Length: 280
Length: 282
Image: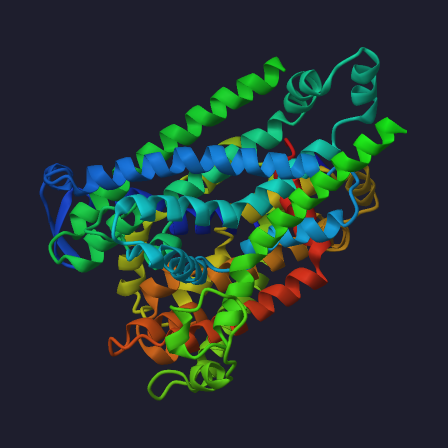
């Protein structure tokens, strides 16, 4: 039996592994390699060492977009998670119409980022009209516009995860805590939050990575204006690669820096929250 | 009596609060719907959702498309790409997930970890090498770079989802099937696959929707308007000829939401279950 299992394993695994290697590992390695080359054409290049990495930081552009992106992501992660958790708590109390509300809150997630960006651009501009400005007048508007958009799109999705987490808490646990005289606040801090730790982990992880990956919404809402001040990392990399000839390698170097950064953040976050979950 | 009244008041406030939030959530969607019926020049100036003058011109003009390419072409392209992607993801991610969840092979943990890393890392670092690779293969301006990777089970999210699901199925069934002489492939086709149908539907749904909404990859690989997809077609309204036609763009945006909304409303429970599966510790 064991033997037949081993005999058949390659049938399932091999194609996937081969494909995985072709579709992911090779581009990954190629991606790192290319960041050390200057492209003469899109298909050809010469080795230039760390030149591209130096060029990536030669002006403030990349650093600005990095900082903008970090601030954006931190604020979005906090607001989305608090918002989604609050909604989940409200919608697990057996109120009338709970399902309808859940549906409504999830709906924005069905709309593509590019359309979302345009809708919000015009709505925000509509609100700014009396002041005689638009969303691209001041990077501040673009920043908060992106935060609002990101919240609007993701709160419903995260809410669904939190609802599943809350519904998974054994009722005996809650009843026992009630009998022991736990008030609402103690209940939240000592029973509910520790029990849904896995949901918090996954939601933080999802919002964190999508905050750093955001592209479509950024392009449609502000396109980086005014003067690249609201350009986030993905858009900055894209523009470096496609809009400036001779800078393809620099774009790739930025992508490598970006990847390392996201990997570090994601790993740190997972390690911290997993260890917290185990304590709980 | 008094307590009952405060309870009632509390519930009322809570309900009103949720209703207000829900209206806030709906506002942009309703705004979009309203804007699609407004004459282009009024979209910017009219704050109200309800159009003071309603017209179907946006829909007519939008459907005509850009240049010689009608908007139906964009829809057709999007459907082709999305249906192929969804089917490929469902079949190949489930095979891979079966291997990870049920078979023993060398370096399984390492490969699983690598697969999970792809879930975490932004795709940007592989974007350019992939672009170059597909260009060498002469695949630019075809659907191949978007669809073919899906046949190679490269969407780690769905593999993870299906692995989680298969792990939740009792092993006794496949053990007794093995004793009855069922081959591994038989176990997959006769037992595991039928049992994972809910997760497969989730996979189909999300692959369809995410491909439908994706803009970045299509922007990268499709270059001529007759290959454009819906999101790209929408963008044409905004930057062709400098004269942006926001009205037709919003009208076609409304149409582009219809498939997503139909899928969502008819298969809602699979959405919810799929999202919830990823949130539970495995």
